[in-house]
Structure formats: C-alpha cells, structure tokens
Amino acid sequence: MVRSIKTRPTPILKTTFLLFFILVPLWSFGQIEELIRETQEFKNDSETLSTEIIGIIKIIAGVAIAISGLTYLYFRDQQSDLTNKLGKAIIGIAIFFALIAVGEGIASL
Image (cartoon, rainbow, N blue to C red; front, top):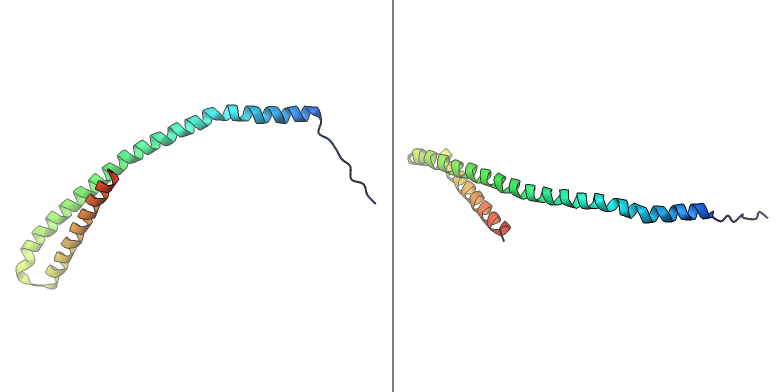
C-alpha cells in the first residue's frame, strides 16, 4: 500500500497569498474607475454620434422624397409601369421617414 504524503503550506506562502489577495483589489480600483470613466465617455460620444447619423439619414430621406416627387410629377401623365414603381418608392421612403421620426421620438423619452 502506498501512503499519501500530506504537505502543509509554509507560513511564507500563506502570508504571500494573503498579501496578494489583499493588495490586488487595492491596485485594481484605479483601473476600474478609469474603465468606468471611459465607458461613460463612450456612451456620451455614441449618443452624440447616433443623433448626428439620424439627422443625416433624415436629410437624405427628405431629399429622396423631393426628387422622387418631382420625377413622379413629370412622369404621371404617361401612365407607365415606371410611374407606378416610382409612386410606390415614394410611399416607401415616406414610411421610412415616418419610422425614423417615431424612433427618434421614442429615443428622446
């Protein structure tokens, strides 16, 4: 039969581990605070960026509606398939524009 040997940690190892577990959290507080600060800055920057992107998309949608509307007015007397498709595209862009406005309203709550 083989006997298992029981070893006990030396007092030096105990104190080293104890100091390690006490001092590591103290060193990490500064890093955690810095991480929280950077996260808050990113959140503020991303909100600003998202509002600017939504503004750009609204401008593009408005210009697309205006151009499509003028084109529809030009082609409406021809009663062609292009006129029908253009009318549907105008309705689709208008719905998209309305959804952006609704989403912006919900985001401001």
